[in-house]
Length: 134
Length: 266
Ligand code: SF4
Image (cartoon, rainbow over all chains, first blue to last red; front, side, top):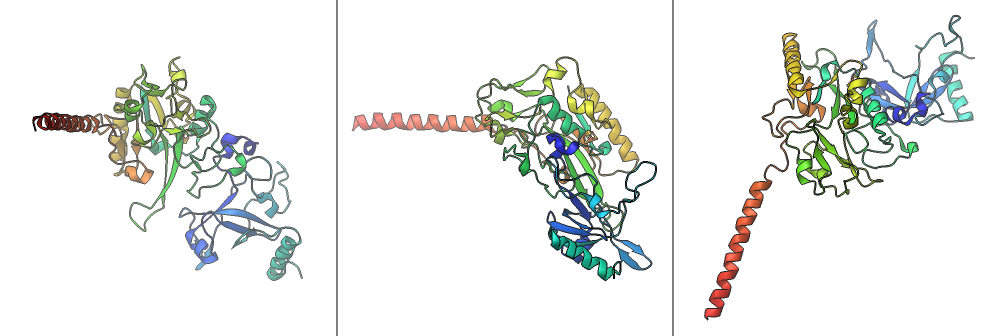
């Protein structure tokens, strides 16, 4: 709804993801540039917001990065962008029938997401390398 | 009457920005600020934290800035996410009002500075006169616009739209002396709590603009928020400049007269 209202659309007009400066450096992401988020389900493209508010987690001596993504965007209205729902499995919470989980593992790479068959090829390649499909 | 904006409690919800636009029917600003485009397909991110408005202008009378400032002691603690709702300062000595040749800019009975849209001819003199860069000309309209301090609401005893919408009472509207007292108390409280950088901005009637009708409590130096640290009414030196010009003109007139008299004698 709020994407269709000009006064709200202008406040946060495009889909974006928040990454730490460390992750941006590691993956070659640039401020306001494009990034592709890939999960086992699909891939979407978002604009990059590099911020010190995101910090890598140190777990078991290793470094784990987080990517923050607001749930809001889609193709309709004035404030547009890829829908993050595309990245999720379609398991629904039995009580409220909304996606059961909105935290998931992903990869992030610079640049826009390929569309059409190229998108499928990209995701399939990830799945195969992750050992999800033979 | 005026505003006290206590940025220490602002949560960055931007309700003030939207309420202002809705009440005052200010158009959405689609392109980069000042471009005047209302084509919403041109909407874009600024890459400045959660701020996609940028600054105040003809189509933005309240602007919520998001500043990601480094921690107080470098390397220790989290980044400080400072939010602050900026607005026209309604200066006591307002340069825009001084330079307006049509009298469109007036001082209202509430001591606020107001542009009468039916008188403004769009000459734009007020734009460079403002020491804060607040007032601007709307390109597709031609006239200058800025915060009216909701003159149409205050006239009827209502609170300005932004202050009414603010859920945290970061924006407070009232008589200036009352607001100043309240601000002083709040500053004391913050200082006692160990917020050493807390400071009032535009509160002092002795400053370069004679004090702001809309003043602020900031959690860092004004520059951090993009505010001029020591604003001065831009027309301050005008009387002196005119005096010098008058002296020069008188000197020239004397020289010309002398030249005529001397020339005739020869
Ligand atoms: S409405 Fe109040 S809390 Fe929300 S952004 Fe404006 S000043 Fe801050």
